Amino acid sequence: MKNDDVLTVRIGKYREQDGKCGVCGDSLSLNGAQLAHKIPQRKWCIKRFSAQVIHHPMNMVLVCGLECNARAQINPDSLQAERLAAKIRKDGGAK
Image (cartoon, rainbow, N blue to C red; front, side, top):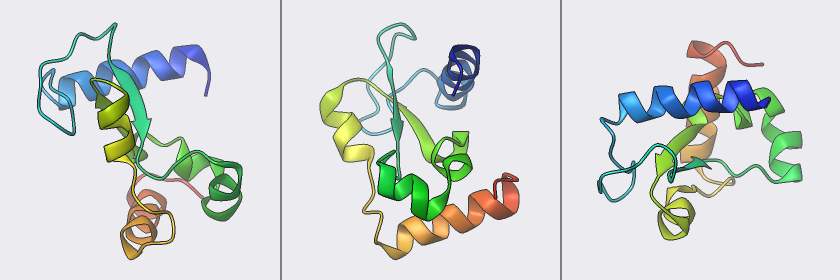
């Protein structure tokens, strides 16, 4: 993702989440918040699901710190990950 795209996603998630962490619900500062991938951005996950799915805004959540970043991740081998990837492909236009 390009820096401009990351900033656009961060701002969109901030608004979507009403300025709150997507995991614990604490208030966020836009500058201090982290953009976490639900399905992790590991090389084998990108190969399995595609970069478009992994870097899609529907696979991201804005979080307050490292602990919530880790808690935001879902198991890439889970049915939950497969369902999220399918939804992104269907509704988000990713391949």
